[in-house]
Image 1: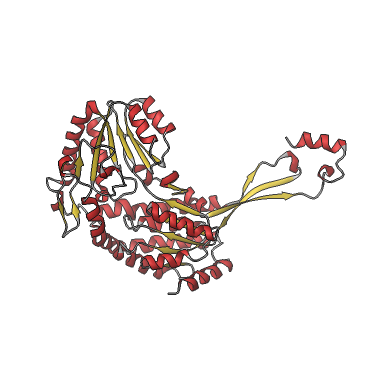
Image 2: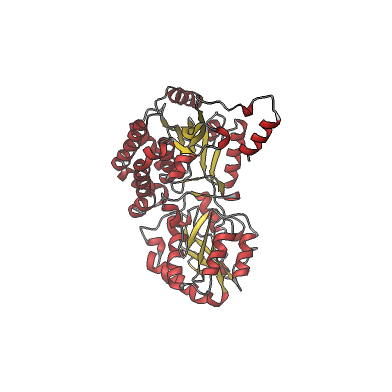
Length: 456
């Protein structure tokens, strides 16, 4: 496949107007849903091969969420696509003002390996709903899932409408040299900077879904057992390979000991005495990342877990205590099953700790104090988050999901996906039965007085 020719084929297909009818978009969403259901077993098998995901986790966190997004968008697409009337200013009398949603054209979706089905197909739903043609570039690190999705897409869409480009760095570079009308990228900060640089050469708008060190704060008023359960779920889901996983814990020192004990209990309750023998516990994506994560585990600070198997690329759920901001595990996004715990003396200390660092993709606060909750939610910059839970905010089509600052730009899910892949045109339709003369020269004293009356 010659990438430049593929992009040109899609541009011609878009220019022909094929994707503009709402009925065509709805049909595309229906076809995608049917194909996912038909290939559900193959997708689950591929996710297990690439990441060791159990069938239950594959459906809950990837396939099911994608199907839910299709249903949500399909139900509302006609309403979102209608022209919307807005008020007309007195200066534009007599006229009608409205906005029109217009697809960008040919868009590129570059997805990561950690949730390869969800983070490829969910942006595609928005792109199709908005009326675009789309090139999908899944990660080379999840080859089995990429292969199944390529087969799935080729069975239901012609490549001039939707196409999957497989491959590694060379294919990524070739794609970024092309002129796209929009680029949607999910991945790491460094590659995100490259994507933005390449896009700037063509003045192509971008959405960047990145990551960072998402803090989890636990104050002394929190329900410690419930907090531990929900933090353990969010931290070790997909072996910690989740962009919004709680990266580290900031906990009031007065309740740290019972919290650590509760965390240990919850890990055993969810994964068993030896998680590495649990068939529902996954693995690290490849040896490179396995070695990097293992290198972040200092033996002297391990209070639970720490075991790992190189032959299966597995690392047990691990808890580190007495961690300091200078430790290696605090210098980068962990993206693995390590939970560093840092003691704090007050919520002021936690507040300053987070605010003095780059904006995270997510923040989680466990508290029963309304004032503390309000302070962190309103005053600390982050992409999105939860109060008294972790990661579930990204599972809602009713809210946008995205980062801010170092953790990304733009958002998607539900209506936000449609808006992301659409350009909103502003239109004024002027009626012809009257033509007020005040805007035309010569600007007499009377006209100037009238302008001050109308334009203010």
